[in-house]
Amino acid sequence: MSASRFIKCVTVGDGAVGKTCLLISYTSNTFPTDYVPTVFDNFSANVVVNGRTVNLGLWDTAGQEDYNRLRPLSYRGADVFILAFLSLARPAMKMFPRSFFCLMKCLLIFQWIPELKHYAPGVPIVLVGTKLDLRDDKQFLMTIQVLYQSLQHRMSKQFLMLPLKLCSNHPSKRKRRGSLRRPVLYCDQK
Image (cartoon, rainbow, N blue to C red):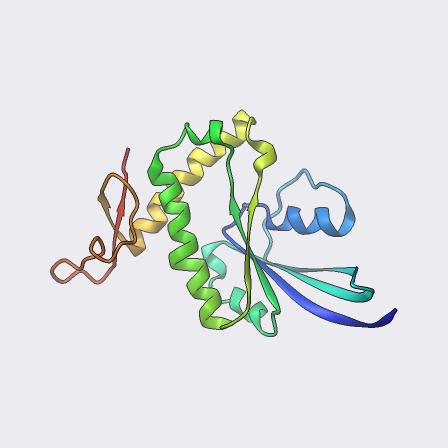
C-alpha cells in the first residue's frame, strides 16, 4: 500500500444532536449511552480508499452557543465538515408544529453554513441526520419538545418571528420593516 494521507474532518452542529456519538460509534464500533457535552475532542481512524491508507482525523466540536468563539479555532486546515442535525421519522414529526422544523432549517441556513463558509470558504459540507433510531422513544420526544422551546428563544434573539403559513426564503417575503436591525423570519406558528 502507498503512504497514508491525512484528512481533517470537523463535525459541527447544535449541542446534543449526536455528533460525539456518531464519531465514537464510527471509530470504536461501540455505542455510547451517556450524554457528556463536548468542548473539544479528537478521534482518529485509518481507512483504506482505492488501495491507499487514509488517516481520518475526526474533530468533535461543541455546538452550544457558549463556544461560538472557541469552535472556529478547530476549522483551520479542515478538508471536510460534517454538519449534524436532528432528524425525525415521519410519525414523530406529527407531534411538532411546522415552526419547529422551520427553526431547525433556519439554524442550518442562518448559523452553521454561514459560519463554515466564513471561516473555511470552499471546504465541502456534508449534512448528516442523527438520532433517527430514537424515533419511537417517548422520553427523547419529550426532550425534543424542550429543545423546540429553547430554539424558539434562541432564534427570537436573532430574528423577528412573524407568523406565516410556511417557512419561506423567497426574497419577496424577506423584508425590513422600519428600523429593525434583525432580519425578518417568517414561520408557521401552529
